Image 1 (spheres, rainbow, N blue to C red):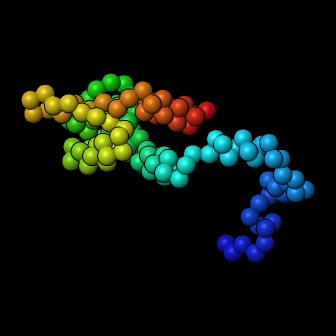
Image 2: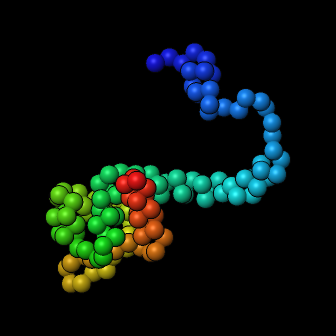
Image 3: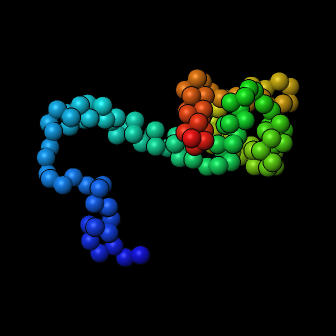
Length: 126
C-alpha cells in the first residue's frame, strides 16, 4: 500500500482538529520521559520478551524454578533450543540459575520480571 497523504496514515478521530499546545502537560510528560539509555535498555528488554518462545519460557518460570529438561518438556522444544533462549534471557537479566550437580535450575531474576510477565499475559487475555 502506498500512502499518499496524512489522511492515509491517520483516521480523522486520531488527530487534533486544532493546533493547541498545553505547556503544563508537555512539561509533565518531559519530566517523566526516560533518558536515552534507559529507553534503549527497556526497549531491548521488551524485544527479548516479545519472542513467543521466550515468553512461554518466562511464563513457565513464573510458576517456579525449573531445570532445562523440564522447560523443554513444558514448552515442547529441544533442550538445546531452551538453553539458547535462556542464554539470551540471562543476558537481558530476566532469569538467573543455580547449579545442583550437573543440573541447572532456572528462575525469574526478580519481582520486576514476575510483574512484567504477569501483566503482559493478563493484558493479552483481556
